[in-house]
Length: 66
Image (tube, rainbow, N blue to C red; front, side, top):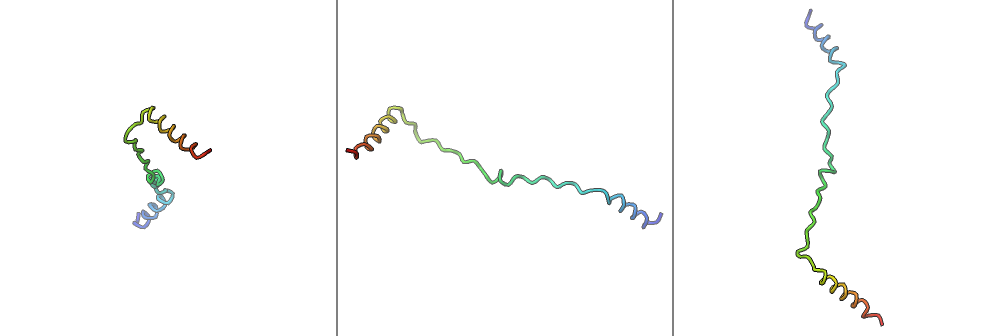
């Protein structure tokens, strides 16, 4: 066989082959969003302090009404 014939056969055999699929791209949105850490308050309030503050707020709201 001549070289030309071998090249033609090789070209015919490769004609039906497809290229491999590209690797999937990473999700840009998933990479871009980074969940923020929620900071804890510097200290916890006792239930007594919470009630005292709520009472003070409630009284200050009603002081103006008379």
